[in-house]
Image (cartoon, rainbow, N blue to C red; front, side, top):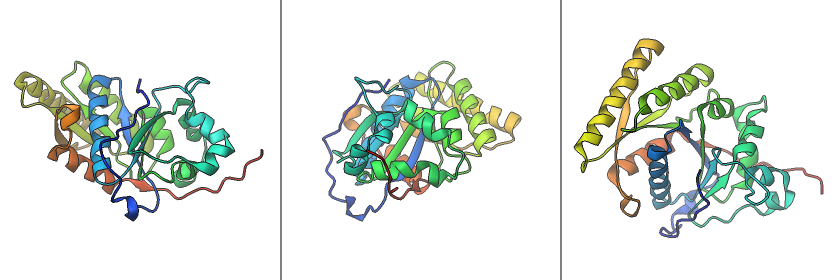
Length: 250
């Protein structure tokens, strides 16, 4: 589970060129040990490029004591005011994203409400399982980030997520291979996991899978070249969404 947090370290000096938020995604496949540090570092890199980030966390359920996207979709006051970003923030979104995912509509129309709620953010990053992403983003140009780490079973769960997104939504993930110069055994294990994933993708899905190595780094040192390249690649395939004008009842 992610905790609500705000990174105060980077300014918003270059956000003037942003007109509408862009949606990108990260697939959660039961390997948060590898996913969460990468998610934090990705958010920091995006903020460094001038994109304040709203993370919609589908692994956390909204409650009365911990409200999130579900409440925002219902509350006209929130819709009118929208958020004022402070670099990046995490919002519980399990129920809210499930609600949006049930709509039988074009991707742009499905995600339109997010454009109004998060109009002051540069990036809306959806962190969810492959099933939710497949129902939210079918056929879109978004390339969900899929991590592979040295953690046992990482290649297996990553393959399951890849298969689901490819076959059910024609989503082609960007695969990040988490490496570490400090721990050679860990890096070798990660490379082995990626090789297994690539072999399975080619054998069973007839799909050639490329991966991008990302150096495992500490939170405070997260402005790495690897992370910057990954952030730019995801931005290239992010989907802009325009503000939705809500017509609500009070």
